[in-house]
Amino acid sequence: MTQTIDLGAAFESLVDLVADGGVVVLSGAGLSTESGIPDYRGETGRRRRTEPMTYQAFLGSAAARRRYWARSHLGWRHIARAAPNAGHRAVAELQRLGLLGGVITQNVDGLHQAAGARGVVELHGALDRVRCLGCGLRSPRTLLHERLSAANPGWGAAVDQINPDGDAVIADAVIEAFTVVDCHGCGGVLKPDVVFFGENVPRPRVEECFTMTERAGSLIVLGSSLTVMSGYRFVRRAREHGIPVAIVNQGPTRADAEAMVVLDAPLGATLTALVAGVGTAF
Image (cartoon, rainbow, N blue to C red; front, top):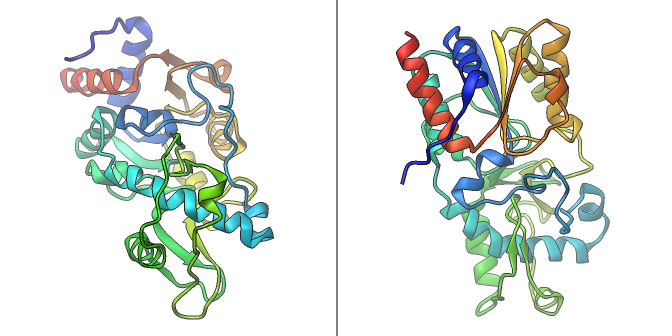
């Protein structure tokens, strides 16, 4: 059933901004919740109790890496099965209409691309790739999944919760029985090709996003609380260059006071209505 929402004057302002073109989209975990992938904060903006793996912990011990890969081996299946929702499809359609100057996503699920969007800058990387910290070799996550399955025949666990980075919450006793595999080329430590908490986004990627933002007609934030600087810095850069900012999110964000337009509304229904509204504006 299609959700009906009253969007009011703020929505009309959003339509006008997008119809002018040159829009850069900055998306966060809230855009993927309708695909069954939870976010870390929810509508209140308060972090959920489960803490994500940090870069320092991952590097610091083999036990932490076993914990990560055991949980991720189960959680990855959930992320890999997720399908784009109406919000992802709406972003792809706006791009098809020639209204977007770029898409930056903080998400690691690949759902923008699955919906048909092109040239997406994955600020925090992607879960469907794996990188060796020794030789730098990148390989498909599907290959690692096969190797881990072969190294752990019959292994499994009840999953209590799935996090947005594909991390499944399971019992510690089950984790201890899990076998981790290393790089098949050099024997080095394998890491998902994503930016962990406590790790820096590669500088060239940040600069690409800054350049995209500075050239934008407007910056539209979709489904991000902007609590961490990783995404918020692009709002700051847009404001420094006099570029209007709009936010569509469920719950408050760090940048609400800095935005020209703020919509606290469901992403899928709002963006579907946006595409229709822009179509009538042409």
